[in-house]
Length: 516
Ligand code: AMP
Ligand code: MG
Image (cartoon, rainbow, N blue to C red; front, side, top):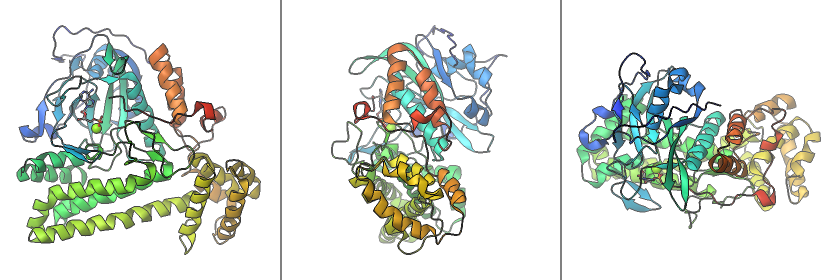
């Protein structure tokens, strides 16, 4: 594990700009910083006492065209901690608003994050490089601008797991500790995370300008979002309608993926919903253990607004808020306000079938059915109902079903996950009859199923244990091991079996905290 201890101490309260020969080359190419001044506040990260690199995502660094050795150097780590500003960076805090649990807050913004700038990766795509926990900004309100090590490592683990699972997501480039404490309910070790995302534009970014009656701001932001994320929309007859339709389509697919993996975001406020269609802002997120549509882990989600089974509804609600901000632009395209409302409503109505289609197709792939026939959706839903009634582990049921698809000798493993094993038998009989109508051989089907049903997810009790070892004993081995395990979620690797099994009753983690 990388454990450099550069101990860089800032001489001033503001980070200084790097230059000279032994520079760390990011190759920044910033576009957001060229938007009008009211879109952000220019602010440098606030230096910290004693930086130590906990983890660098070498693979991600290389895919972004960055040199991992440069990032691991004293200067590199100082940049990742916010103690130095890299050449070409134009640090800023983005402005945004948002509905938090249904209540509108007209000004949120990056209260503890600095967008350093953008880089173009090896894949030709543009990515934000952002420090999170890097000090106060004009948007901090009462907050300290900092992040605790626990939540930083949680975001690192879960976002990298999601990436490996094939879900569009912000990713973790690095985590550093600060040698400072942050005061939450108790004093916790502080950390800074470097986050990489297609962008950090949010539904709340549009709401910020709409709430101010700044239609020109909404238009500038919409044009920017189209250029950056939906270039095909600029060719459409109604580009703003195409933008809205594009965001909805990506969100419908994204939420379907969450559902198919048992992921619960936990805090789907409009400021945490990305325009690019990526999963962002990992807080009190968790994966389902026993299948339960009403499951909530987040300690702050009292009403279950963001419960597992409510996520599509929550997303649609958020998208309705996005549509509202775009109404003035849609009105110009559609010829009047009424026509604009009709356009928005039509798209919003279409969100549900889009989501359902993606979810159903995915669910059928999970049970080995590639071409949908009448009755298939009901067959899959029946399995879920039986899982719910029998406390069956979501991830493991589908993983073991891959063995059952190869032959009846695989049934024992699945049965054992059901409180009443007969509930599985009753379903499996009908499933087998249906599989006989599929053309592929059992083994081929099982292999295809293993590519969509992970063996390993970041189980809450393992995440919690890894975070505790790291924060209480500065022992990062469990974090490293778990990160390695979740990075290849679809492989059965000998020796890693313990990452696949559900928590024992006494290990169960029922509540997760965002820790902000
Ligand atoms: P979150 O719940 O992490 O998505 O954050 C919601 C809002 O609170 C965002 O505007 C954050 O920037 C802000 N925020 C969260 N934690 C802090 C903190 N420790 N200091 C300042 N602002 C914060
Ligand atoms: Mg947020």
